[in-house]
Amino acid sequence: MYTNRYIFTYAAVLVIVAAALLSLAAMLLKPFQERNLTIEKMRGILTSAQVTQANAGNAIPLFNKYIVKELVLDPKGNVLNTYSKSPKEDAPAFKIDLKKEYYNKSQNKPYKLPLYIADKDGKTIYIIPMRGTGLWGPIWGNIALTSDFKTVIGVFFGDASETPGLGGEITKPKFLNQFAKKTIFDDNGNFTSIKVVKGGVIKLPEAQRIHGVDALSGATLTSNGVNDMLHNVLESYLPYIKNHR
Image (cartoon, rainbow, N blue to C red; front, side, top):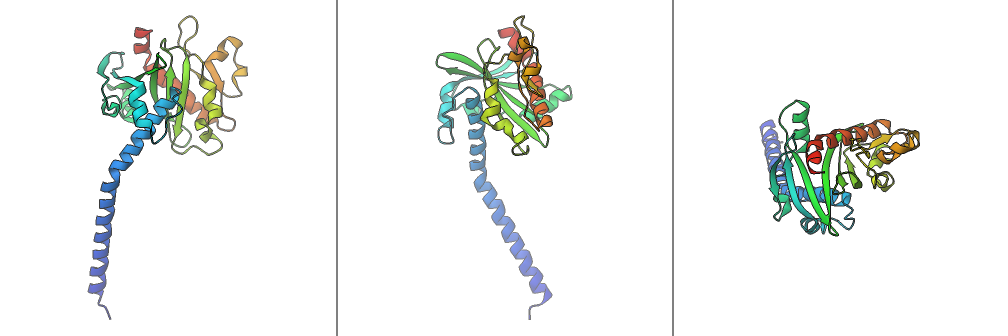
């Protein structure tokens, strides 16, 4: 018959051993987890620029091939840092935490913004990372613009917990493909963003449909989140854009 002391000692040893093994596993897996996050981030950036062949196996070399420069901007559009060496994931811009920076912006504190510049088929593409809020949690993505910052080349969206079949459709081609060739400025140079329109762009005046896409049916709050993210993020880059258009 085992004593209570023996049972408690045995249980305590098991807990300590299990905790040690879990900590060791976490330490060993951390580099792989970080690499996976880096690859997914690169794939999102490349996908928005229509580098559609990017996958887990080739994302890093393709990123280093197509992304020729990474910038860190301040709220006034000034360039704080320029990085063009490889590996590109070592760039200060790549390491920026958007959640932290947009929180700082909401608190009227200094903040920094990343901007990626790609060269694809001899054409310059500007890629802006985005972060916002959906129905159940954060949403994020990238929007790629032509060299005059006016026309959308492509977008990429991701989400943490939007409802599959509803808000989760922001990640699907049917929604994403609407953005290509839309414009974020009108012919007079006024900023319009891209509006995600409930009921469809058909509800907009014909001249404004080039600045809109159809919202997701049955996912109003997620669609509103994408709409707000696009406007808020693009507006943050206007000082730099207006200086370089």
